[in-house]
Length: 503
Image 1 (tube, rainbow, N blue to C red):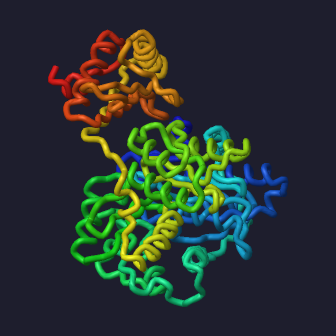
Image 2: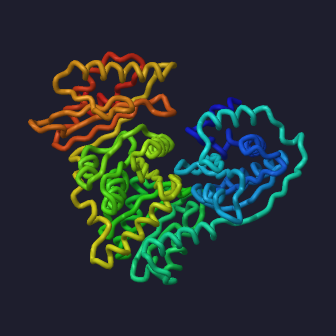
Image 3: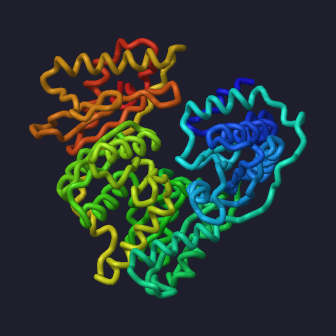
């Protein structure tokens, strides 16, 4: 098999159940052994002195894959802390939490992907592994046969979620400046875990005094029978929105399967995800200290930029990929540019105050603190983003690349657009164009009231196209203009674009 085909960004992912699984227990065992040796090399310890923590989300294949990875670690001679059901952010937090502090950790999850898929995420003390590290791990694992080694490292159950819950509870009490045992009395929160790993958050809310009537899908069930655990999924967001309205709650929160992403719903059922979520967190941060820089991915709207500027901040667009925005935020801070937040429209968010850890549950906890403060003033979280200008029209189209050398074909198409824009009077290349090509337009006599972004997917042979307009009919106008530029591009399936413009 092609082991490198399991790479998905900085994770390992693949089909793990059914007739033809590619992520098998044998592969998990080999990866466990390889990661133990990798961790020993990075820490400078003998592998016999290395400890690795393992956790998993609720997927059906999770227990078997986690057990296999633990056995591989043990056969390498390292020890294992088995956390059982856990969240991805908690796997990193365990590394820096006294009483645990493993040398590395593995989370068995495929995030928001369908139930038949699973994966592994790897962490060391300085954060998640990068893609090049995962390439190395897979190369090493492909040459191992763990059965040639005896089980020698200790494997012990040591749940971490109760400790992580206490850390979140402490953040709430600190944020509200109280040591009361139930500081959330009077707040009504609906929790939707989508049958992933985050159902315990309702227990946390209730223990702190919040009312959780209407919470749903809290029981871990890796078949995800109710809706996909995904804050970007329309069905999932409709479900939690309706639950909030039925219960008359102050807000609702929803997590993906491993809780590194989240979104919320205001008391009127309004979804606060994507640009709205970025705006909300930015407003909270900039209200406390204006002048800071907010790093986002490249597909954020022009209205969000104006909103952040109006709140006294600087909007810094960067490349898609949560590791990209986090690494860029770290770099800016190292250069002396104060940047407290790195966030993607997908809901991946990392706060400087939380080690720039990609933690949706921590983000929601910060929002809960603000919601409690606002309720005491008779306001809601949604009131903070009342002035956010949202597009009249928006569309995302995915153009498949049919050429075998898909990167070259995609880059050629982007270059065609860039070349045309350089010469066209009414096409404006965005000054912060850091990924693909972002073009703004002056539509219907206005200025900078429409844009599109054409970029090459990080992993797939696809050109995602995002387009937004602040005036009716603007999306169609821009798509027609773009089609005229790309109609002779080779190796690009333009049918989805033609269909949108009625061609």
